[in-house]
Image (cartoon, rainbow, N blue to C red; front, side):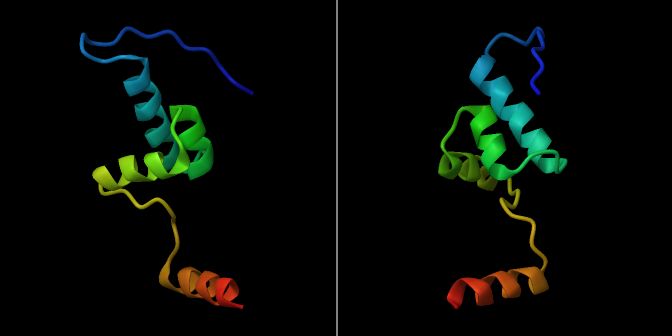
Length: 76
């Protein structure tokens, strides 16, 4: 389900900036995946991940145990 929202933004911001901000916030809150956030922002996944890195935000939410489990599964 999608929703169309109309907002006023300060001079200097455009639709791309707003889409990216919304995508990052939705991702940060855990509402959508990184892939869905990239799609919402209109960016390839790698470019969205780079935007997260610029903001010191992790692209994936793994604790150490989960990360090790994923690495073991990927190595098999």
